[in-house]
Image (cartoon, one colour):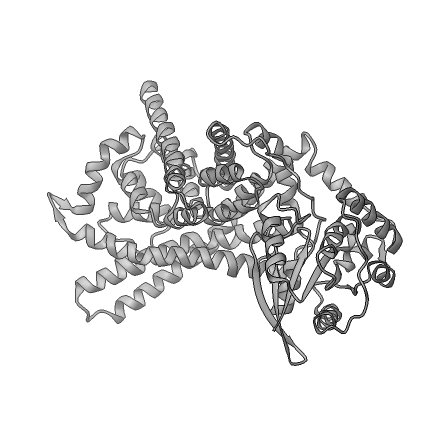
Length: 600
């Protein structure tokens, strides 16, 4: 089997080429640094097998960052039969620098000028033959979205691996400054036309403007949450009715079964699982596609560039804003994404504070609690809920930066800087967007929630049936926790629900309702019904404020904690990642409760 390595700058389309050749689904995105580890796959051509390795995107092989160290170590240790240097046709001069550095190490190189279709649209032409003669290696023009354009790449790889290529690679300059001048000369030799940046420049003036940038970011967050809240109402009601109908059918089907077993399965297992799906699935089915569209469009790196100034105040850089964006979907994914940060102190600070960002699992609870903060449910209720949710998210981002600044005393990072190429604006591909948002994100998060909701429902139902004092064990535990809950401005039921919801944040309010109803959570219960039960337990405006703050700031879910341990391999960091948001939430809730008591 021949070994082939894909190397190139971030965001030149290496992972897309890797997916197209191997048929695998390496996650790609329209921002630099998505691939932060080595991915492997294989394909066959004309009876020969090729093992393809997708190296992390790097600008050099000097080993000054984890990505550069991984790429350089792989090339040094594995000595692949062919190295494919992937270039960006719209930024040929910049991406040629790494190619020249690769040619210093090996002459078994194929130059792949990717994104050629984008270059043509933007007024650029690449002279393939001129570049091949100048470099002395095969050059192919590709568009990863069009598989037919990759046939030439596969042929070139085969010729290099089999030794058919008789060309001799050019000898690049050993000095980085001279290599840069050499890359500029090569680009001038083979490029024609003029890069049209007018549209991008107009958009960047809006998205990155000193005032308009922050205004647009706030409006974008508000619009994202408004669409999620407003759009989720109808499908959520449909799911509620569907699960209620199915529950009735299951009840009739199991009529002859022992009553205890029927209640255990229908009220405990089925009822909890149905509620979690009906509450979680509609918001996720709207939020993730919208979020993925922003990612594909190229807005997320611009949000990172916009937030670089407040991040610099906190002692970190704008790349941490990208990990925050990933945390909105899932904190475990956000923790893994911290690998894109260049220094160890920056990565540790980003990991320790990522759980301050509310993940998608907390949104249903925050949306429901925001209803308690409104005087009434009028036509503008969705807009007001979106405004409240936007305010909570902005507050969470601000607090994460404050904690990051405090952590800077323990983890100083004098080398913190922000260097990131802004990718071109690209039209999202509907098919890939749906696959990534529905299958890769929504299905994975929902599957994890269901896997934890089913056993949690069984456990809560059993605990509620164990006699203890005048009521069940669950109610007694809530009563024991009630003083601590009231110190935090809530009550024992909510505090117990947060504790029992440790496996997944999605379970908190459904568990609170189960505690109040003695372990019963029917599929017919609507969000309005859940709100009525919570209100009957003493939840009002003040308790909802404290509960929303604690929902925003408390310990990470079990999956995120495990991910933190895997990424850091430090027990101290894992414990600190749990303590920091929990302590912050507890202190804020206690101060709010004290302020409410003083106000009478």
